[in-house]
Image (cartoon, rainbow over all chains, first blue to last red):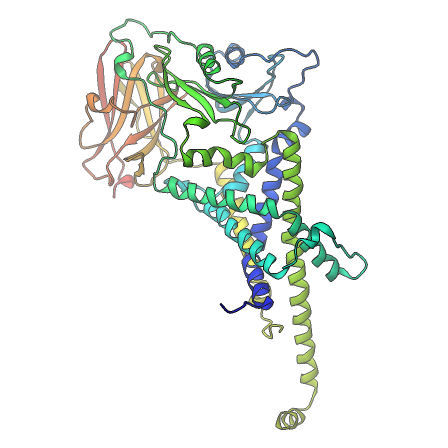
Length: 393
Length: 155
């Protein structure tokens, strides 16, 4: 096999990242901010904080639902979500004057700290990062594909970068950052150093990005990764009764069933029935640290308390496992705040690499363009007859 | 070797991709201020008064093996809690409740403030098709009402 030259790899390296460098940089930047979007909300909005100076125990989700229902008697509550222990739970509901509202409820004090309508900072950042706000139609968004395509860019840039910088491991043993030898040397050293040290991160982002692409293709082609939660058989609903029946099993019962089923289960995402054949959907996190916060859970029949479907890492097939480990690996919430900080730092490095890469390229091409301009202006001042004589030599 | 051509395109072609991001601003605006098609007429069905509104004017799409079209149904009269089950479908005739209740396609869901439905639809909506709402209450009484489909939703 013919050996490929460094010049070829350089060209390939540039081709992978330069043509779309602004989008690439933007996706890296928005992803980096998304990693700490909850924490930024916590910093900027005191109402989103779950302060607990009296060290109270966390209230069950069913109690938070009751608190919101009491405060907004005409509200219809659909979802309850919890995040890190320092962030208030969110209770999502609709009301006669609120088509979509999110209540920040302190899970320790039970206080409704704020009710917001519309887009939150976290949703804004994650939507911007994941699909650039391009609309969804028939199960796909062009923006989502565009972002997924960055996985190829990253992988290509990584492989070609390593082919250029063949002895890359020197950056681990003898890291080199020359700051007094001009801008060009500094940028090249910085680009190389950041690239080598973020190699694990680049690989992780590329692989999870490729998974997101595979997921998008499956969504568009209506291939289900996870089966829809089953509905209640119509025969199990009361029939021929005078008044609207009350479901015998409550949300508290459903959470209790989930807690009994999985050791160390902590509910993080609860959906209440949206119609009378619907179930309670109680999802949460358990013992598997690499799995997301929806990897364990049950759907509970509100009429007989039966578990209609169950979800846990042990019962997942390969695709389901990938879908539940991708987000923690991509967003770095495997180990809470500390891993988020690590992911944020490496996300910032990656964003910086797209900028230093462009500056290196820009420096070269602008200089080359200036040289060409200078050459042209010199030649324009030389008499044409002289040029002919020169050519004729 | 440096490229000799130094046209505007050569200078800026790598940056042109950034213009895609302007589309993000446009789509964000559309997201924040969505425009929906006109709501259809309000009709009575039993003790309910219902106004359907399609979410868009697109053709039905395939979802879970069924062609589907999304609607919002506003119940201006009647309590949705009085509904045991309700379905919405598009076609020449209403689908039978016996068929629909076997699965969850086309079932109304949501709250008193707005019921949503992924209506069971044909691949192509034709002039003789209507939109059918079938409601069963807790006493087991069945009611059906239909709407003519506006021309802008036909093929």
